[in-house]
Image (tube, rainbow, N blue to C red; front, side, top):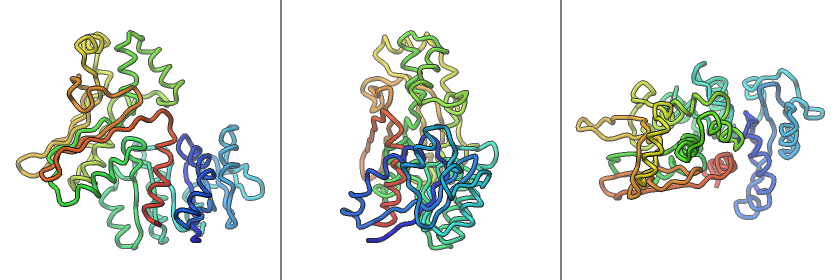
Length: 343
């Protein structure tokens, strides 16, 4: 039995649900993989807890569900102890970095936590898009220099293994085109609008379902899809894309009348992220709301479905779609990545 000591930074939708589910997987991980995953540290925006003997992930989840900080963990919680300080102090094998995306402030605190962990010799698993968008090449170079692994399959399209499928299983191919619907909430909202639901009511329903947070501008204006496209371009096409390379339009540019008319024509509107190979070997990147016909791979996507299409020179056209009724698949990409490192 191999014991893997891990730190979890970020206890929002993904981190909390990871804690809820990982305890249920304990027996399977031991029996199938010979692994014991031991949570030794956890941090949220208000504080942290650290215990070399292990924290109970179920109790961590219960604290968060009750609206408390993990700093309230009995005996070992500390109010005001920030995530970076925890990573610097903790003795662990792997960092699970699930803090909120924060591109307006340099992807912090996630980026610094990831850099620090790797410099200490820790592997890193993250569903946080921010650090990969801001410093994709730097982080991969650092991981190589430190002899550690960086896994980030959960950064694109929730629980869909879009990164793994493209980066691992398309090796040896030239990727001619990437098409993706990597953002769930935009399709959810546009389908409601096509049903005749007013904009404000559609947003309220999306919040009630837990698929829209805050003012929603990050998703609705296309920034989330653009960030995910940048990661896909780097990871799958080996193209050093940045957000500045993406031509972007969000769903706020689409009228309800256009959505209703498309529905009547049998079309399905989706926010389509696309990277198309150019004659010079580069890629043109765009994020645009598009009416898709039923014969398009995404033309029949449901309200809580996402997908990716890879067009290649030698492997044909590969399509993968996920139906994600709740955030659990997104949260458990961290387990998939941990198993990719250790099993």
